[in-house]
Length: 438
Ligand code: NIG
Ligand code: FE
Image 1 (cartoon, protein in one colour):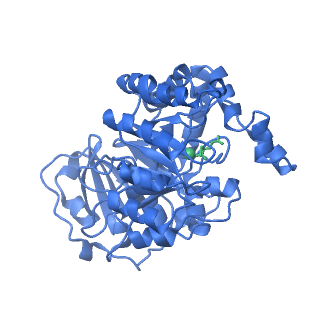
Image 2 (cartoon, rainbow, N blue to C red):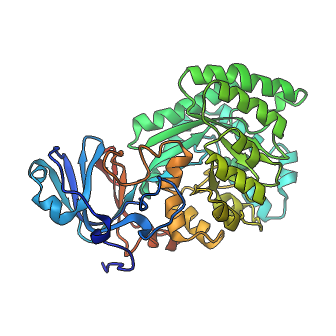
Image 3 (cartoon, helix red, strand yellow):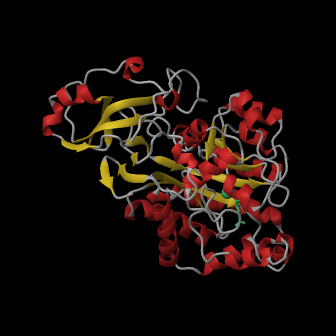
């Protein structure tokens, strides 16, 4: 494999000699895209002279489930710790942090392929929704599904993401819209992490749509979700964060604010579906609550971008939904960059607007449709995605002390992760320090 020498090598990176600590496993001879920037905080907008934080002919050593050391292969080969370790010679491979899909609706019943087909035969989204289709169709299918059915379907989707180097998946509820089914979705999401070598972050998307049975009393639904439902699910340890669909066709700023206030009182982190179809000021609301992320953002003004930057809220771009809905206004990437907002990229995997189980495809679309650079897109699924989930201290870059989650790739340079359409160059994944098939 040819080396991309337009990036930097160890001479610039000042690696340290390995210390005395023991190593369990070492991957040696690879090109590492550590995704660390010179002195920049994790997830900060890419800058400086070390794009991708590249280290050539490098080694990464693991102790337990943590990265013990990162540095030049030559130093690793001399280290006493190498003698006791399991050594993987991977000359020519590239290693990145394990990819993080920071926005999915992975757990749902049924699918909406029939609606997709009807739309392509001329039916409109609104017509289908009026007939009880759309989110409500998935809600019915999800309520009818057993936990085992939901787990089986979600496992298939999770495995497709994992095959492309994904080691952490955020999973939202929101297709139950009744307490028992919301609980079942979150329990299934948690169970994925027990059954599969992948990590899961759960999100209670209580305000996704108004269920039919509350059609006559919106306020009663918002009160229930924000009060007893949220408290019960959080007390059961099922809620890592909350989310709401703040949009003209979903929940207003005032309704969303009531819900977020209750989440804040419980100390829960927040995401927000903001600016997908119109600019209600949801990004400003996310910023006001110090949300971890504001997601979609096709409709976002300069003030909204500045507010996100001030609160350190990550902009999560979801090109799969933009593509499927055939939208024409991309998110204002230039304004996000100018304001200094960290940018993440995710699949938004869901049955209606983004039936996408390829994070690499989402990265390609973020570049081709939204104009992100490959460097930004790869930060978007590593360092910035970790920040969007509030786990940047633990994941998202390759550095000593971080979780040993990384992916091995058969590529010539990092941008190739964004370049292919339908290609999967992943040749190995390490999750919590253990090698698994991709
Ligand atoms: O992220 N925006 C709201 N929710 C989903 C789609 C919901 C559906 O159509 O099932 C989204 O795009
Ligand atoms: Fe979504």
